[in-house]
Amino acid sequence: MKKMNRRNFIKGSLAGGIATAAAAGKAKKASAAGGDFGGYPDSMGVLVDLTKCVGCRTCEAACNKEQGLPEPDKPFDDLSVFDEHRHGGLPRRTTEKAYTVVNRYNVEGREHPLFRKFQCNHCNEPACLTSCFVNAYTKTPEGAVIYNPKVCVGCRTCMIACPFYVPAYSYSSAINPVVKKCIMCYDTRLKFGRPPACVESCPQGVMTFGKRKDLIALAHEKIGGNPGKYVEHLYGEREVGGTSWMYLSDVPFDKIGFDMHLGKEPIISYVKDFLAIVPMVLCIWPALFTGFHLLSTRKQANKEESPKA
Amino acid sequence: MLKGYSKQYCRRKPHSKFGGDFFKSLTFSFILKRRKEMGLKTGKQVGLAALIAMAVPLGLPFSANGEVFELSSLANLYEGVSFDHDMHIEAVANDCSLCHHHTAGTPPKDPTCIPCHKNSPEADSPACSSCHLMEPFSSANLAISEKNPLLHHKVKPGLKAAFHQNCMGCHQESGGPVGCQDCHAMTEKGEKFYNTGQYAPKPRKDTGHH
Image 1 (tube, each protein chain N blue to C red):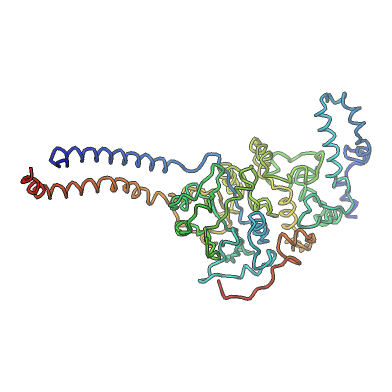
Image 2 (cartoon, rainbow over the protein chains, first blue to last red):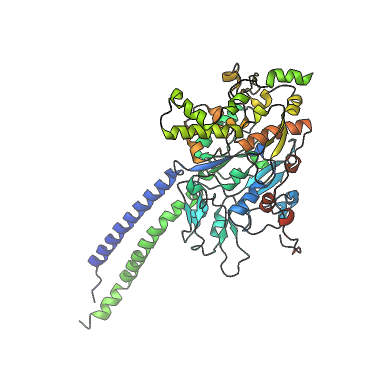
C-alpha cells in the first residue's frame, strides 16, 4: 500500500485544486453565455392585440383540432365557460385537454369586457426547460418551447418553475402521466413556416404572426401611432428575459391577470450562480475532507504500520 | 335620391377595364393574340397571365355593384355572407372610404392613409381581397411584407380579419347584426370544429371536480 505522506497529500490537493479551478472557469463561461443569450435572432413570435378579441373561442376550437385533443366538456361556441371559475375565484387555466383558454375580465371603466387568450408564452429562456432534470424541453430556433413526452418522467418541476403557470398535467393517466402544454403547433405548422392554428383561425385578427424582432417594432409603432389607445407597455418584450408571445392592452396589465412583478431577468438567472458552485463543491469537498481525515489519522496509521515494517 | 347620389360616386364606369367588355375578352386565344403585344415570350408567363385572368372574375364583387353578392371566398366553417352592397352604401351615407379606405376614389377617412393617399384616384380593383390577403402569415407573404418599407401596409389585417374588424365595428355602433350566425350560418364542418349542434359533447354528470 502506498504510504500517505505530506508530499503525496500536497500533490493530491494541487491536482484537485487545478481540476476545480477548471470546472469553475467552465461554469463561469456557461453562466456568462446564458446571460447574453436573449433568444434566437430569427425566432418567430405572436403579437396579441387584446383590444381586438371578442371572446368567440374559435382559437380554442382550432387548438383542440390541430393538437388532436379530447372532446371538450362544453361546445366551443358555448360562452357560459366565461362564468366558470376555479377555487379562489381564479379564471380558467390550461389543462391537459385545452392548451389555450380565453378568459373574460370585466374591467371598471371599460365599455366592454376584455377577453384574454392564455397559452404558453414560449420564453426566450424558459424556466421549464432549465428546471427539467431529464432535459425533456427544447427551445427551437423558430421560437417554440417543445417537449419530448417520451422522456418526461412526470415530476412536475416545470409546472412549479413556470412563472405563468402554463404546463398542465395529465392527471387522468394512471400509468404514464406527463406534462402537457402548447408547443406553438411546432410539429404540424411552425416547423414548415406556417402560423399556429389559433392565429390562423382568429376571425378578428387579434394575433399577428412574424419574426419576434419585427413584432416588437410593430408593437411600438402601434403604441406610438395610436396615442391613448394602448397602455405604454409591451408585455413579454422583457418579462423573464423576453417571450415569443407578446401582448398589447388598453387597460393596465395587472387588472387582467398579468403578473407585473416577474422582473426582466430570466428565471434561470436567479439560480445559475448557485448552480455554478455545485460542481466545485462536488470536486473540492471529497478531496479536502479525505485529506483532513488522512492527516488526522496519519500518526495512528504510522504507529500501526511501523512494527510490521 | 340617396341611391342616385351614391352611384355617382361608387358605380364603376361602364367601360372601365373591369367592365363587361373586359370579361367577354377573357379567353385564352385573346391572351395568345396579345402575347406579342405584351412582350410575353415564355410559356410560363402566358400561363401566369391565364391564371391571373381566370382568377379575376372570381374576385369580381365590385363589378357586381348594385347587386347582392356572396362573400364566400373564405367560406369553410361558416357559409358565405350575402352582402347587399347598395344597402351598405346607403348605410354609410355614400362614404365609400369607410370600407374602401383610399381605393374608391373618395377621400380617405383613416388618418394613417391620408399622408400618402389624400388625392389617390380609384384603384384598378377596389375589392377587399386585392389588398387584404387570404393567408397573411404564410411564409411567402411574410417575406414580401418584410421587404415592404411602408409600415402601414405591413400591418394591414388579412381578409378574414379585415371583414370582421370593419363590419363588426360598424355593426356594434349602428345596431347591425353582431352574432356569428346572424351573418353566416354554420356549416356541418363548422359544427364538427366547434363541437356543437349534432357534434355537441354529451352532457355528463357533474362530478364536483374543479
